[in-house]
Amino acid sequence: MTLTSPNRGYPLERLEGNPGSMSWWSGAFSRVAGSLGDLRTTVQSATDLDGVGASIRSARSKAQEVASGLAAEIAEAELLAGVLQRYADAFSSSAEAANRLIDDIESAHAALSSASATANEAGLNALWTSRSGEPADVRRANDEAQDAVAARDAAAGDLADLWEQFESHYSAWDAAYDAALAELAGGAGPAMTSQAQNLLDQLLAADTPQAVLELWLAHPELQDEIARAHPDIIGNLDGIPYDVRGRINRERLEALRATNPGGALGDDVAALWEELTDGPPFPLLISFDPDGSAQTTAALAYGDLASATDINVLVPGMNSSVAGIGEWGDSARALNNAGPGLATIAWFGYDSPNEIEEPGMDRARDGAAALRSFLLGLDAVHPTAEKAVIAHSYGSTTAALAIGSRPGALGVDQFIAVGSAGFPSDPQVLSNLQNADDLRMYATLSENDAWARIGRDTSWGGAHGTVPETLPGVTEFGSDGGYAGDQHLAPTPGHGAHEGGNGPLPSGDGEGYLVQGSESFYNIQQIILTGEPGTEIDGEGSERGFWDLPDWLRWLPVDPYRT
Image 1 (cartoon, rainbow, N blue to C red):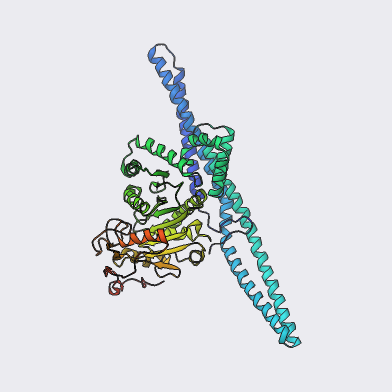
Image 2 (cartoon, rainbow, N blue to C red; image 1 turned 180 degrees about the vertical axis):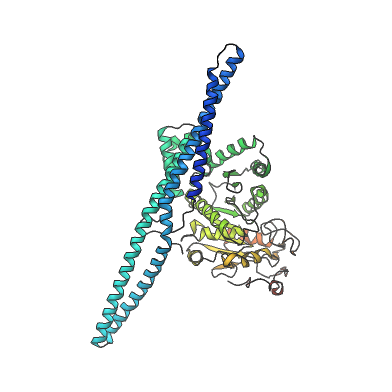
């Protein structure tokens, strides 16, 4: 159940944090600051060395240089220690108090719903009885109606009291969170004017990407100063125009590339740089965080977002990483070539799960929060463009959770799921998806796709076990091969979005769901252009798959074709 507070619109969601861990890190940074202070004192003593000569003067100069450098490091460690401890204290006193109220509010909300239904029923009964009943029956019905209304009003009062407490605690936590971000932003990087620092504080405290955009556009004279001082913030802040973010993030990537990073980060940087220099037209790096919690996150925009009438967002699934963004770029360019006015974003904005994590929802919840903010930012900056989210595998689980997290679908007009690992089974999420006025949903599952079936049927507790292809309101389209006129369209051979099938499980030959020339990709293009798939399911040229045979799936705990 997704509820929002009545006065401030705060979401009734558990605030995540570990004040004990934050306090430990605060202490660790304090110890670092103390150790560096001792070191600085020792080094400082070398500036008072007795004697004359070039060697002594050089030693004094070096000592002063080191001591000056340590001062900045000490200040940063002390800043981090202070911010972490203050936020940990605020989290303990406010966020945890808000979290403790969640169950009570949900129970009180259910009690009010029940009491309201009872009151409505009693009121209708009293009205009916007043027209045809005996006087004693009328009095009894009226008394029951009054009692039911009183019970409803009492339940409403109880809920209102709980909401008031929740909003008070949530507001205090929100202010502490904004203060921590502002303090961190003010304590690092080049010094800024007070006007620029004040605007940065407001940007960080803004509740929505729309508010970020309005603040940014209202102060053009401060934009360059803030961007120079904090490119990592402005380059990733949803609501900032994408041409600004693209320029900033390209410069950040180029600077990081110059350091020749190794390992997985080096692979990510190389893949992004190869895409950025593959053109013209060149894509924009509209988000870039090389210091993500588990992996590098980034988003590349192909085509002209500013003039696009249709913007597509590609969301990858399990085991995806920025190192593989090139093949997603191929899909983005192919989508753009389908018609005029198209632009496509390859969004690698979350830590994708591995096989062990896939049955759970943790990665989806984290990713959905990031995708929700991104989509709201996209809608704020480009409100008139049609927007389609095209999500593969666990990416569709994440996207469904994001788009269905609130009514209105975050400005998304089309949601296309391919090889889905299953939609979340949360009734409120599904209701939001199915009842959004302007949202149209589509889904396909290749008959050769084993892993999507396994994924949706082995999710822990059925958390993402909802089958999108047969969900009411979803248009199913084919991915098993067919014809568009005289053009033969290839079947999707397994679970892959691009290369690969089901390895080590059986699969056919060919390319994945998002490769040009496949029936799946052709239908996606037609959906974007016309709103409808371009082929018939099981039409001419369709191939019977291996994994559509129920006998092969008897070992699964539930039917993989259920809704």
